[in-house]
Amino acid sequence: MKFGMKAVSNPLVGGWRRIAVLGLIPATVLAACGSSSTASPTSSTAAASTTTSTAAPVSITLAKAINTEPFATANVAEQLGYFKSAGLNVKIETVAGSSVANAALQSGSVQFVLASSAALLLAAAKKIPLLAVGGIDKGDGVQLVVSNTWIKAHNLSPSQPLAERIKGLAGTTLATLSTSDKSVMEDFLAQEGVPASAVKDVSMNSAASQLAAVQHGLAQEFIASPPNSSIAVAGGYGTVLANAKELPYLSDEAYDILITTPAYAKAHPEVVKAMVGAFQKAIAQMSQGTSAAITAMQPLYPTLTPAVIKSSLGSITFTPTMQQTQIGWNDALTFAKKTGLVKAGQTLDVTEGTVWTNQFSG
Figure (tube, rainbow, N blue to C red):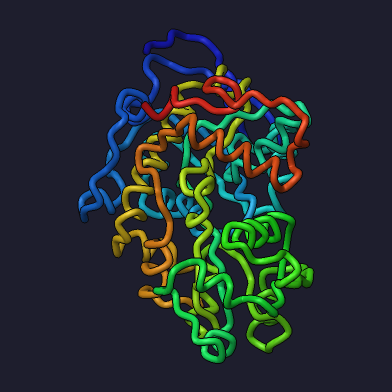
């Protein structure tokens, strides 16, 4: 892939500018474009590449919709030098939710977003063009955390059959942040034949308030992704009693994803390929819970020990290749309709090439 003396658009924070490109794209970007292999999580790959290039790296901004462990892949890629070795200068920002992240993507102030498949489908339902260029993990990663006080009083255990665990929650109150939380709990109850009225819910305004509600007995359970579920476990007042992946349609669901716009992917395929390649290396580290990954994540979760971080990583089904599947997106659409993000009668095409592609991860 060779370029002559011409100007190309380079997306930068706050707008666009023109730059002159001489000769070849940096060799590191070409390497990322030409290879689909992930890095072996060894000490040699954990260190940043020492490869240097005379060409300036491509500057881009990535927005994380929320600070979760799957989205920490960006920080791991940064700390271990994978962005730099791919010829990228990535600025990572954590914003106030997927709506803000997607709005920034549409405005051009960011070029990539880490968010959930549900967030992308909500945007697609509103005719907002977004494209998932890689999957971080699959299967709904949220966990049902129940207070140890309730578990002890009702003789519950994570090792019991799911039906026994869910039936043991009759009379509890769920501290909830969203309709997604309620939907997962309702599906647990319905699957095991427990009336929806058996569990009440109380709305919370933050993950911190969920934790406090369970810790102080205002609620008996909450549903959240790591590390929030891990915080309750580490604090000694909660236990992960069930995982959303125990619901059949959530086990293969396309979940956390790397998103850009179709226009950006078409205009800058080599940058998207390089970005995906850097993420593949970071996911390889995190999926095996290497010390390099945990050290890179530690500043994000200063109250969690390395052992807790490693344990919570083990609950996530990472996809090191970042390949997405049709089954996964069908399941994601099913969940989006269950939660009302996509109206039941609304037609939404989720076949490959519409809202998702494996073009850059293969």
